[in-house]
Image (cartoon, rainbow, N blue to C red):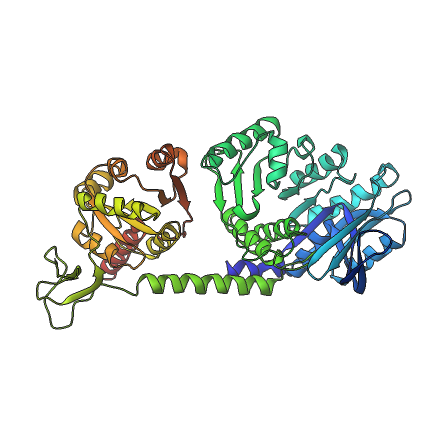
Length: 539
């Protein structure tokens, strides 16, 4: 995804919305006022920043986008200060100074890292009729030139049904994606938007559904809530931010199959402006040609950066690059740890794990010659042995995890899934399809490797605690026998995952793992076929 960050400098991003001035007073509190039981803030420094839709602009500029803003402020000193700040972030702006409006100002008092008080000076924006024709002409020109249009609604009077529908109609006319950060319960004014991006509270208000991300039924409840919004309003996509639970996308075309990604924040100091950062980064990524899922990941990563800062903040392109590098390094370390213990047969020996490996008196796997295979304890178990192991684990209060698959040609995607699954439990059981069940599922030409080899390779991984081979068409009988606490698998939503529903039904958890795109056994087989065909053609 780094390549999309490199393309941000070519993205023409337009922001429209409620513009504000953010003021921050930083200081220390050493005493309580003698006049009233309140702290006395001794101010050390002050800072002014763009607020509201202006923070979206600041984020777009920090990412390196070619940024434009069209909006309205009051004809007052604060409005002129906002204009100065827009110029400082190198944003081309068409700012309208409404004679009857007062620029909104939000002042925050901060002692160390703690917010003491926020003071808002605001009045709703008056009717835009006196400047409407000129504003509409400027908006039309800006939308025509943009790659992506971001509408930041803070419910301060700018986005009336008339103005919102006029802007969205221009976006449709010129074929520009429109992404709305909404406010309020009624989304009818957003009809025609490409994306509407509510947070969890706003999602609940608009759908009139109570949603708890920690509940096992959250996915089904969220789908029902999204469908309710799609039934009421002509919105193409919903992109819901879920705070510490990440982000979830629903499409009108297929609302039953939402995509959810986890949060990236490690330590939270201040959530001010995190939604603006998410909006800006998502829009910039789409403008750079990223897929919706890739744009979500970058937006989530950027939000994780800014909540670790104090005050209204932005994520820069350099910070995004560094975060991606750190994420990649962490994945590489996980893979290195996962493959640290591998099945080894010393050079010069003919010993191999062909089904003839044995166990010595310490429980370690050995080849027929008696040499250790470096696996450690015996991991390949029968289901009868596994029942006893699971019972012992549960007696000791351990969380038992479960996943299953063919694992015909081990690849990075498998390792990534095992790493994620292992993080959800204390002990991970991997059930491997037998040769017969693979043939029934995949066809007569599969598996490429036999069940002995496949199960031995899985057992060699440090992330995997136990392995069992099963012959049934699904893992449901094995799950019924073992009753794991957690089942984890990639690529399956709960409505298409009977084993997941089975575990949830008796009180366990079903975790949909994040897929690493481009890795699959089928893809590997096809690549090998194409390579062979190319060789034949050269001959």
